[in-house]
Amino acid sequence: MSKLHILIFPAPSQGHITSMLNLAELLCATTSFRVTFLVPAYIHRRLSQHSNATSRLNHLPLRLHPIPHGPHEDIRPGSFDVKDWLDSLSSTAQPSLRELLADDEDPIDCVISDGILSFVLETAEEAGVPVFYMRTLSACAFWVYFCLPHLIQSQELPFDCDDLDLTMVNLRGMEGVLRRRDLPRCCRHGLDSRTMQTIMHQTLQTPRPRGLILNTFDHLEAPTLDLIRTRIPNLYAVGPLHAHLKTRLTGNSSSTSLWEEDKTCLKWLDDQPENSVFYVSFGSIVRVTAEAQTELWHGLVNSGKRFLWVVRTDSGGMEIADGGRGRVVGWAPQEAVLAHPAVGGFVTHCGWNSTLESVVAGVPMVCWPHFGDQQVNSRFVDGVWGIGRDMKDHCDRVVVEKMVRDVMEDRSCEFQRRARDLAKAARESVVEGGTSYYDLDRLIQDIRDVCS
Ligand code: UDP
Image (tube, rainbow, N blue to C red; front, side, top):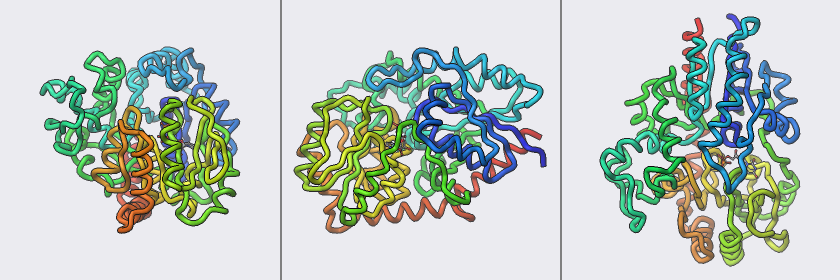
């Protein structure tokens, strides 16, 4: 069989890179495909500096290919505009992309593009190269974005923010589950919201490519996946990708961090009792105000629980000192932290990677979502999957303390039991006979078929 050459293009942010690099490694580890993985030069530099990705990838037919980047591309928390980001990326990346797609010496057979980069789809279509999309969010959040035009048509959007607890009635499959406050935050800013218009435009292109790859698994999101299939029949649910990679790879999977991981916190965790520590992290983009951070800190301290808190140097907020029951790091080896027996809960922003990593580790969550898909994910964590509490819009010390206690002191152990059950289902989905395992094989076969 000939070595097919696949080009993978993620949006340049930690969450997108992590899941798409996991997919790239999976494809290389399980097939004879070669992968060229496009990243802006500054991301390439940071990956080389802080992750073991570049050295690990030396053993795989996977090449990280740096491309130029423009002025708006390095995400600066607090001043981030998704439209500027995508426009800038499109204008600076397109020449390199065209060049790669026209290279007769080393032709590209197929493109897997991040589903928020429609310029990649257009450029590849012009070059006659088949495209698959990957979206790095949950199926439930994808479906919400996909339904926004319908919500506008049925006049449920825009809404008056005075009553955010009203439940949505025109969101197919989620009637009565989602309230106004659970929609992506941009929905609160009226129809002119640049973020909403941009994401809606990108999402509406999703039926155009050959298929859609999602980092989720059937057991977790079956009803929503069925709904998406009614509009996008060729769907591949291949997640959780980080767990999937572990089952198909011999040896350890790579770290994909853009920041230096402080591994000393694992030693600190070794000295803590089992299930006694709350891990606190808000991912790579969220900026926490000093006021909110103060409330969170008081809530945690008042709960009497130990905590390991990630405070990125660029995340704003106040200085939090180590000491007593708490430990603070700049960036943690998150998967290893969540898998540590001392960790019994996760205060998270509910980014999709973090949510899935918590699901796989069987750790219940206290969710404090900020924007994007996080609002939808946290509602599902609490109201549908029952593996945590959602404190959206109510982050004060009393609520934090209560929810932390709810999760960690739950006498009936319901959160823990459901978290353990879901973790088991996640692991089962990525081994032979599992749904994600099957979908990955189907994807690989479909890529071969469209390239033949
Ligand atoms: N992460 C990490 N160390 C940290 C904080 C986060 O390795 O201290 C990783 C985390 O494991 C996840 C990613 O960064 O894979 C964040 O992605 P997510 O989708 O959760 O959130 P985003 O950063 O996109 O908001």
